[in-house]
Length: 633
Image (tube, rainbow, N blue to C red):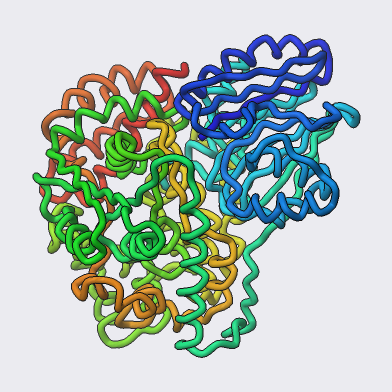
């Protein structure tokens, strides 16, 4: 667990900014709470934070240098196949002074340059400084498990693991209105953009080469998806099940190698249960962890988690929370958030990470399976949309009814009505518009109406549609499920799900490893036809069938539940004054000049009505933004 930052100054103006590297590195203390190291020369500064138990072998401090002192590296992540890469390099004549994956990565880069990236199995962001060439080589892992933000202008290049470190360099905090517009719809901001116009995110599967006032960004990986081949694997369903079992077990095994205490998240869902079942084969004393909600039985899945733990015979710990326990962490999460990010389940992930960290340093998770194998409700809806019958036609025809019935996520009935309303709305949209609408909490018109009238013609907003089109370029006019899953892997997974887990786990010094995102697993799954993944009856079909014998029967074909938190209740009680008297008050909105208060007022009235729908998610997005605005302006 590490945090990295650095600066390459191109002139004397940029050189002045080097003085900020110490504070920038210190701001990453949650990612590496124990040690800080900094390197400085005439034009370059590099900073690294780490946990004391990481890279202990032969004291592999960072920035790390090769024997010639030409190449230095700062590295955040884990390389799971580093031992075999090390053996290859030794056979070529390389020597090593440590047993760390950091040194292997450095010398693999020296040996193979950018081609080294295709050899890595792991998650990472890193920078190699070449003193002789006077260049940076910066890269991010294939799926965006680890973050990397940067600023490039005529004076300097800056990079860091988190926005809070970037801001230490004194950059201009110019609001990116297209990013704000996206945020008001999605509750997160997709890469490569950020809330600040000068700051960008390096896209997953890309690398950068930086020389004086020159920046070159190139892709090194794309998911190998051949749309025209229905079954690129050439395997039967039963053969594919067996190969998936083998690949996933190998991925879990790779992620079990650790010198520190390791456990596994166990939510009670299929994905984390399968990961735990595979892990316990190789680690019989596996410690598993789940989180439950005593006050919200509709969202509580701990009974399923206990059933899995009993079958697997793991050392299981349940963190059973009340609404008060959740609410007690709201302000902590808001304070840690350094860019607007409003996936409310981050609260639950924060607490799970905090409590898990008291027992272990590394945890396995089931993240990625839903995006790979069609596990979400929206995937079932899309499948029915693409393969309609009389039921689907009936739901679409009753769109007027769904609009007037009460909708919310707080009960099975009102949640079903909410889903039926979204389904019928999506039926009239194009493939790209439907995808974007189902990924959003607000339509484009609703989000635009929230902005102050003077900002609705802001030039920056004109960038929104080109950006959206780029994000959705993998969706053709007549899409199939694999097209949708590929888009999820490029949009939702890195920008929402992985961002959430990285932020909330790193805030607590916990490393989370995700076996489903082993690139060999991902590549194989995208060679399979959609029929192996979903049908009218079953989501994540091949995964559930492949591992049905190792899990309790009650987990098979269970309805999907998320990490929901009781926002609606909080907003109507504990957080009411924060909404009406502070962050969303008319006085603050008017003084701020970003939002149109009459539209805010409409949302607040809907919040306290009998038909709140998804408004609580939109209100949460506004609270997150306003809290962030107060900190950074």
